[in-house]
Image (cartoon, rainbow, N blue to C red; front, side, top):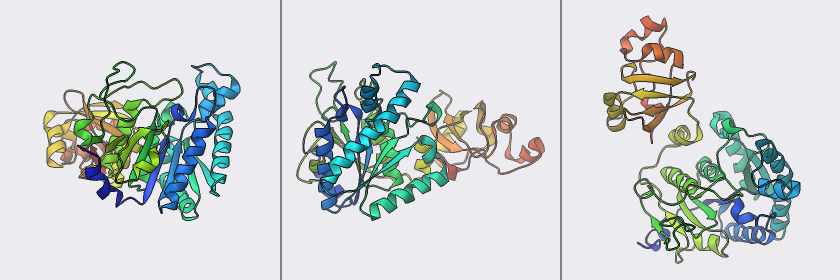
Length: 377
């Protein structure tokens, strides 16, 4: 089916756009490509001139810094962080020069996962970006790789772009890749792989698609782009994945009469902002394995998780932390915020809610996780 069936209606609702560009597009392996950054600035200026607000999520700092430091192709974590520190200056200088041609001011925002996971900092980030947009400044966001460790990393900037799009209530996310879009297979292994122009149902149509691996310059392969697109679609955001090496990709993305790349249509049922935050912005601190009855009640009946449905507890989490919910086969099917710490959930597993006070000596709630703090994946 053609994208054009959906584009006119979707674009009619677009006011705010997040554009994500990765290292494989920005770098040729020997440093930053000034021509790509200049074209990107021109395309974003074009969008702003048409009345859109635009936020740019960029990679490229480590790639630029590696060239400056002469780092190996597979550097240590410390060397990657040093490269990020050296390269971020070069990256933002290039952007400042490129946008200055269009008399556009830019602002740098460096984030870690904890900045969006902690609710106050999450809101502060949103207010900062809102203020920049209101003053006509282009916010340019990157992960703060200089200080990020595994516990506070987003994992890749594809995931970051989906979280930023949700944070800013964007209506369109454009992910610029080193391939033409979502393909029927890995083009490095299957030369006959074809472009998939439209994904109308992100949950049903994304299983088993293309490569998990990333290139030598970045951490986000096509699998991470698909995951980001699915997460954005669940927040009601349309996504276009297209080649960043081809001129006109961004302009075609907002043209209702032109097809480019792969269009991922937003989910019909939008995940509320708080539940999207629980599902995708938080990292689980542990897991709860449930019996079949509890898993079915959560999946199909909209119930809260009671102590009686918990069979196994893993992790050292505190009350209010996010945990994964596992069905009897061990598959994660949901996430939620627990009312009790792990040590107390161990004592309560398999017991009735009426026994909580006598077992613990206190009672915060009847549920281990209330349905308002639970989201199905």
